[in-house]
Length: 413
Image 1: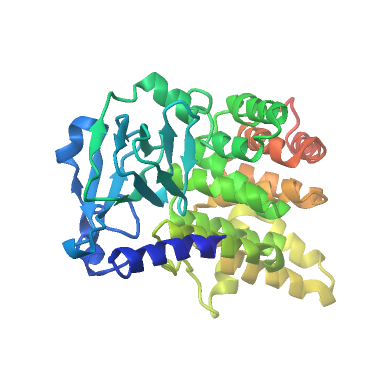
Image 2: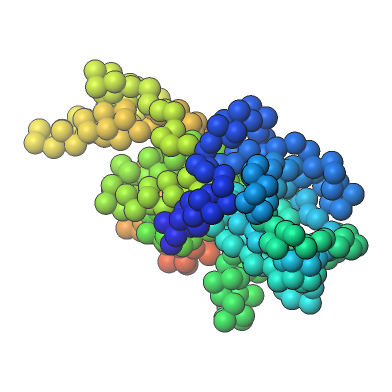
């Protein structure tokens, strides 16, 4: 599926004459780009500003008039959309970055993600624009340019826009609900039950910010091998300003806890997602250790988080098992936990989320509850994380996590 998305963009380049997506023009304008994408963002779209609510940008991509196929990159800031309008010759939209919506008059709105193609019939009245919380870019291809004329109509008011994008329903969520509903369109009762619970009740509990909710859900999805949940949460991560480095660090952090066999597929999913959204890979390295310092720095971080317990673990380990303790210090903590990109409090929350999602790790869960307390994540925060994950991990693992919490931090304390 991802290859076909990239092929659409590559073929469009050959057909419409803009060549390599990351071309000289894109590089020349890179310093002007606010929203990371594979095409130039262009200048503020002043010529058509009267037909837009919010700020948009326009970058013409084709130069040769002899080709007679005008192509432009149109970028919308979050919440920006154009008026209802039509084209006598139709139009083709190829989505390249971010998240947006397209709606024809009298039909439900359609969520748009990178790789989606919209074929707009001649004279079809429609609008398109960004999601409330995400930048959005698409290529606009003018069809039948010799005779194609645009007719601009009235604006898409706030009520129409909220109804189309699910704004009111998902204000307390990570904007994942429309995507979940697309998967459950033939199961409307389940969509309503799950949506109200996962993006309503559970998110009203506690004081976790949206970024933390997304990060712990990503980590939980990796632990459960829940690829589709991970993909949907990736979209929310990008829409809510979580950086590519932070996304990658969630992946790397998961390796010592769930194993590379479970993480490797998610690395591929993530790389495809970032590439389609215009992120150049590989990212800048975040490692802070070398082969010579990894054990020393890892052990120091272990003791900083867990104190004297680490010395007791080394002392209690039989001689033929001490190498596991050394691996924990050098590999788990030295290679992974000392990395930059996420801080110690975030990493301990991720570890807690992974362990409760795996199930059967109650001893380690209790150890990392204490680790979380030591770095400043209190019981209220951990309970809010468990509540956030409840719709995804189910009640048995949730109740086990709560039992561990109550054992380490009794309610009377």
